[in-house]
Length: 531
Image 1 (cartoon, rainbow, N blue to C red):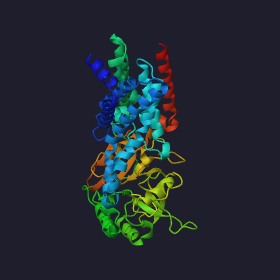
Image 2 (image 1 turned 45 degrees about the vertical axis):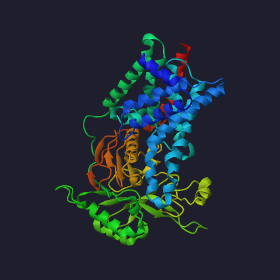
Image 3 (image 1 turned 180 degrees about the horizontal axis):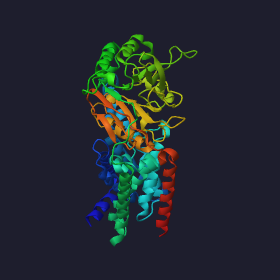
């Protein structure tokens, strides 16, 4: 009875009261995301979403669409505002230049992203059935809106709703079959199922959807237990990695005057003894530094390469993030600058590079259609590179002496499901260099790491992740952490490299499994409507 009263209070709410309910319900979803990972709370935003659409009434089809889209916008605004508030920290790195624009990242971006669930709520209302079938309709349209959000305008699939369940290791293994969007489809249905307790058939019928959801949840946990081996993953023979996490403040890191001091810190920290068996860099085969490690062009600074060569023992390789200058193009006044991963051998030679393909809009470059307007307002990219970074042309495997082929990923390239693998033969591991120092001690770096771990599960590949301020870690192909350094600490991390597992179903078929699940949900909703 109390559940029915709660449902009625949401369904019958009107005006600003209904908008505030939607805002609060959406915001509650952020509690299920990292770093809290209170995943059972997914039932709050999803269940209330069903009741909000139940109460979206109008005298015409267009009126019902508008009513549902309105509450969907407020619901989405609450979710993205609570989940992405930490973006404001980036505007404080150079506060004299960017602090005034903080509302654009903290409020305007969530307001824009909220149009995706608004569209989903409106479309769901047009096909809204009675009973449990509406749970399936919500899951279909809301997951499709998340797929759109991951692709429209270069895409921004951050905190996709499936991430609310990804914090539970066993449940997250379902991504090895259906990927993030398939996990999202199922997560929405599970979270929304309790809505029928307040509004469905009388008697025992109201328990059918929640009971099925619990059975599906138990099945996901059981599958995860079955998929994950009891012991640690075997390691690649003869490989000993050292991950260096300098924990540099972002403002100091990109100051060219600090270039020599930064390099000195890297060299000293990289040679730190961590145990009697590991007295320093002499005992490792591969030393790895984070994204954009230097406030200068490494390839054009022979003194820095010489000092790196002096540090590296024979047959030890440095893998580092660095800005790279390309060839000057005709008619250009300066060469293109790439955000790159560079491989340096023990003689100080750069033997190979990877240039970041998927750049961060507004952070690393300004979209051409908006560049003139943005610069007229006195704004620029966050990175201290005139004109911003240039994009690499294609994703290619990175050949590194002594290691399996690497799938190189710089910063948020790792958040795009189905787009992390290079062309050609399957990689042996994912290499993610990043700099989350822009976001300080906030939830952002935890969310970033969680998404990187889910890519490891999707592809069945180990992940080597090195971050300036953390979280640096090595995981196996099941997303299990082998070793890690916490956020906001300085240090080095020595670890082996787990072997790659067999290609997962998702790695082989991509989003086809998600499409098949969508078709199944549609069929089931049609059958329920007929019944």
